[in-house]
Structure formats: C-alpha cells, structure tokens
Length: 182
Image (cartoon, rainbow, N blue to C red):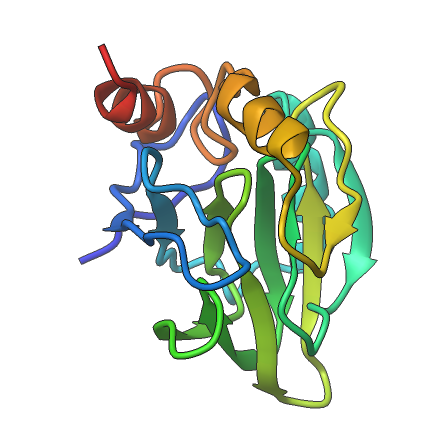
C-alpha cells in the first residue's frame, strides 16, 4: 500500500518499484542504476502539475517542462529524468523495443536513470507530465546509438543528491548508492 506523499519535509517516503534494464539494441539503458516507479495517492491533489513542480523544485529537481512523452524510442545521454504524471493515463514502453510496458496514471512518478529508453505507446487525451532533471544536467534526447564519448559521459554523470519526492532522506540516494559499483 502506497503512503501519501504530501511534501518533501512532512511525508514518509514512498518505496518505489525497482526495474533494472539491460542494454537493448541501440538503447544503452543503465544496467547499474534502476528505474524507480513510485505509485502515490496524489491523484486527487488540486492542480497536481503545480504540486509536482513545487515538490520537484523543493527536492532539488528543478522542473523543466509540462507536456507528454514522445511517441518514439529515445533516451537522455546527459541527464537523469523524473516524470510526474499530473493528469490522465498512459502506457509507456521502457528500455527499447520489446521492453516492459508500464501503465502510468495521475499521481505516479518515475525516475529514469541516464540512458534509459522510453516511448509513449498510448495515452488518454488529458495525459500531462511534469518533467525535471537534476541541476546542470542536459535533457536533450537521443534517437541513435551513443558514441563512445557519450557512453563515458553517462558512466560519469553525477547522481542526484536527493529523491524527487522525499528529498535527501528519500529512497533514491540509498537505492542508487547501493547500485553503484565499488
């Protein structure tokens, strides 16, 4: 059962579902860091898009955009990404062709580590996402195999200092630190 996430300071952290994705064709994914999928009960929050923008800003993930998810396979080679589902529902394929299909609905939040492929398959007409990246990271997307320089950059990309829902004490720093090679 998901716990309510109201804000970075006052709510207990929601434990995310963890999904590791290996390289898949031209999509590198991130075999070291898992995708984190948070199922919250925020769907009834008034102006959920604004709520996500405020929450992400407070937790060190400055919001960058409101829109949907591109309906083609792509990944980010220079950033981790958080997607807060502010309205509607969607089916998203993660990790490239043949990858797992994840149902997303208002209130859900997913964190995609650098290199993780994603593609919108179908969405309700009201589907709305708030997207954010850690400070200083570039959200430009890729639709082709990464170069050796990009692979090196992805391997060296700093981890975010905090979880986008719960801040520094949230699950992301703990889970991604455990996944880091020693």
